[in-house]
Image 1 (cartoon, rainbow, N blue to C red):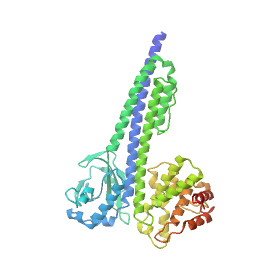
Image 2: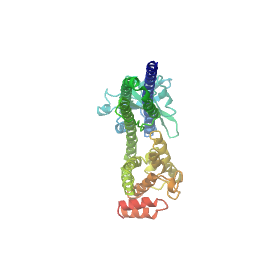
Image 3: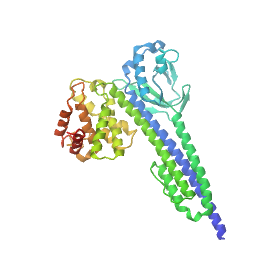
Length: 460
C-alpha cells in the first residue's frame, strides 16, 4: 500500500511539477519578448518624436512634389538633415517624410533620402521621389501619427523588407501637423531576441523535465522546498526582477536546474541592459547633434560629464554610481532640443518669454527620458540640475537635501563649463575667476561639499 501510494504521489508530483515548469517557462518567454517588444516600440516612438522636432516644416512644404523636386535645394537640405539623423542612429534602415493627399488612405512622399542616391546625384537608386504615392490605409499607426508619435504594433513586411516603424507628426509654427516623419528600423534585432528567448525557454523546459523525472521518482519527499524556490524565482523574473537569484545548495539535478535558471535570468538581464544601452546611445547622439549646430556649445555635455565624474571621485562615490553619473550628465541638456535654435544662439540677453522657454528644458528633458529610462538618479540629474541649494532655482524650487547629490554635482560642473567657455552672448573667463565665483556662491547657489570637491579637483 505504501509503495502504491508513494508511486501515485511521485507521479502526481511529477505531473504537477512538469505543468508548473511548462507554464512558467512559457510565461517567462511571453513576458520577456512582449516586454522587450513594447519597450522597443516606446523608444521608437520617442526617437521619432524627438527627430521630428529637427525638421523645418517651411522648407519641407516648399519641396516640389514631382521627380524634379528631388533636385531642389529644399529637398537637399531636408535630405541632409534626415541623413544626419540616420547616421547618428545606426539602427535606422529608412527615414522619410510623407503627407496626406485629398484621397483618404493615399499618402505621398515628400523627402525620402538614400545615402547611395545622394552619392549618385539622385539616380534611379533613389528610394522614392517627391510626390510618389503610398497606400497608408493598411497601417493604422501611420494614419494616427498626425495626432501623436506612434509605432507599429507588429512587424511590417512590404517591398522595403521586414521593419518595425515609428511615426511622428511634423508641425508648423502654429502647431498644425503638415506631414509625418517615418523611421524604419531593421526587425532583425527583434527576431533575434525572440529566437534567443524561445531557444532558452525550450532548453530550460527540456532540462526541467528530465531532472524532474529523476528527482520525482527517487526523492519525491525532499523536493518540495527546492521546487518552491524555483517557482518563486520564475515569478520574480516574470515581474521584471532580473536580479533575483535562486539559491539551492548541493550537486544534484535540482541544484543544476537552479544554475541554469540563474543563467537564464542573467541572460535576460544582459539582453535588457543591451537594449537600454542601445537607446541611451540614440539619445546621446541626439544631444551631440543638438550641440553640433552651435560651435559655442560643442562638446559641452562631454566636458560637464568629465567634470562631474572628477568631482564625484573626490567625494568618494563608488565606481558604479560614478558611471551612472557620467551617463546622466551627458544627457543633462537633452531638453534643449525643444527650444528654438534662434533662442539658444541669441547673442544678446534673453527677454522674459525667451528665458521662460529656456527654463522649461529640464522638465522637457525629464519627460523625454522618462519613457526610455526608469532610473530615478538619471532622471533627477536632467530635471534638477538648475535647482539651487537655497531653493531659488527651477523648475521645482527644491532646496538643500531635497535636491539629489548627483544633480548638485552636475549643477556645479555645468556652471564651471559655462563660465570657462565662450558663448554667443559673452566671452569665456579664466579658470581661476570661474572657481572664485563658484566659491562665492557656496551655500547659496551651490552645495558647499560639492564646491569643496571642485576646488580640490583643480587644486585651488
